Image (cartoon, rainbow, N blue to C red; front, side, top):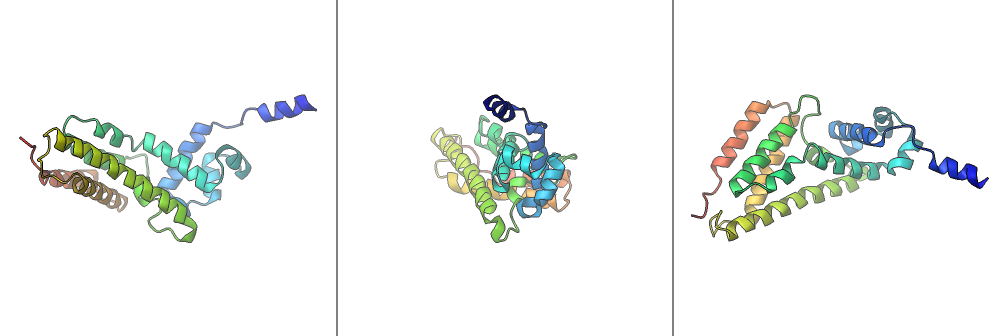
Amino acid sequence: MESKRAASVGRPRGFDVDEALERAVLVFWAQGYEGASLDDLTAAMGITRTSMYRAFGNKEDLFRKALERYTEGPASYFARALGRATAREVAAACLGGAVRSTTQPDCPAGCLGVQGSLAAGGAGRQARDILTAWREEGAVHLRHRFQRAVDEGDLPADADPGLLARYLMTVANGIAVQAAGGTARDELQLVADMALRNWPLDGS
């Protein structure tokens, strides 16, 4: 009996977990948290609800994992941008990355992290809070990076790192919303370029 039970527990899943999660990302990205039903998710993932619960937990757990995968994939430009040499290069990489990631031809338009729960009701409150925290974490990283730029003289001494971070996040989020509405990549890049014209000169 014990050996049979151990074999059952140790039996490999009949699906690729990473591939199933990638498909879940696309469903949440296209339909948002509340718009993505369990039937939509399991059909796209090619698994049963039971398999989904066993591998990923409930819908909220799956959404968290999907957001992590999205952060490591389509939104990974943000982490790379933080490592650029100057604050202006950081800003340009953030906005350029936002334009490209929200207008990929083989992916849903817009940004999972921005639109995933914009119209969420009570059932989507937790997802909305998860995404609010996700966006706020991005703003904090930018603020710290811009504070370093001030300290190093890359930004003027009177520059406000927090305000610059909020400005950049607001423009990037707006780009995502416009992309979801069908605005073309070239036009969105012009918006990004215009925003950078208001970037403060260096501290020299």
